[in-house]
Length: 124
Image (cartoon, rainbow, N blue to C red; front, side, top):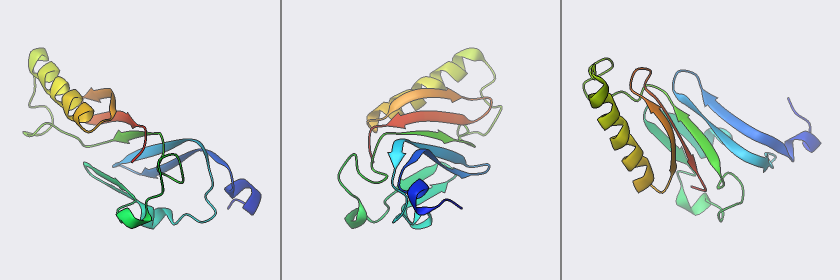
């Protein structure tokens, strides 16, 4: 319900799908021409920003910029609660960290007990 002026510079824009996750686009975002439903797909264990590559602007423009992602329901393969000892949980957390870094993102946190994974990207 923002006006034209407010939409032209939305600070720390957050897109959330309850029970699935959220993404915070850092800085100011001009939302006047953005169809967020078409541009951001947030599913369990999956995030797509600009699913159609031809629509993706250069890094730093639109939504193709630094963002922090929080994903819920990211459980170990055997499901929640199956990594009961601390060493197993730490090994799995290290695996998630490596997977995050392999995708050129910055790992922030992962919790085996809650299934919450948080990371940051410079652009998409």
